Length: 166
Ligand SMILES: [Mg+2]
Image (cartoon, rainbow, N blue to C red; front, side, top):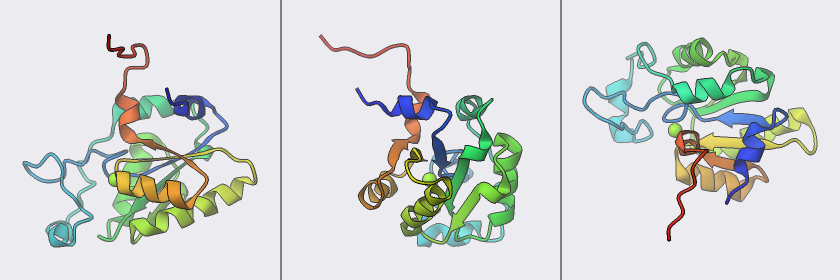
C-alpha cells in the first residue's frame, strides 16, 4: 500500500492543490459531466463568462483542510481564460486559502517550476504533496521534481476498508 496518507496527514507537509477538477467540480457545461477547459477548441465557450460564480467545491476536501494551518496550503492552476479574480475569490470563500497562495499559470507545463519555487520558500527538506486530477500533469511533476503527488480521487477513498480479493 502507498504511504501518501502519512504525508497528507502530517501538518508539516506543504499541500499544493490544482483547482479545476480538484478543488472545484468540473461540471461547467450545462449538461456535461466534464468539460475540458484545457482544450483550445472549447475555450471560446467560456471566454467572458464567470464560470466560478455558481461553481461548487468539494466538501470532503474542505473537511480535510478544516483546522489545518493554511499557511502551508497553496493552489496551482492553469488559467488561460482570464478568470483569475473570480477563481481566487471562489477558492478563498469556500476553502479559506489565501488569494496570495493561489498561483495561476498560462500552461500546465509551468507547474513543476512554480512548485519548486513554493518549496524553496520553505527551505531544504520540506515535504510537498501536489494534488491534481490530470494524470499527465502528475507524471510531469514526478519526472521534473522530487515532490510527492496524489490524484484527487484519494480524498474519496474509504480509509477504513481495504478491498482484499480472495
Ligand atoms: Mg485539473
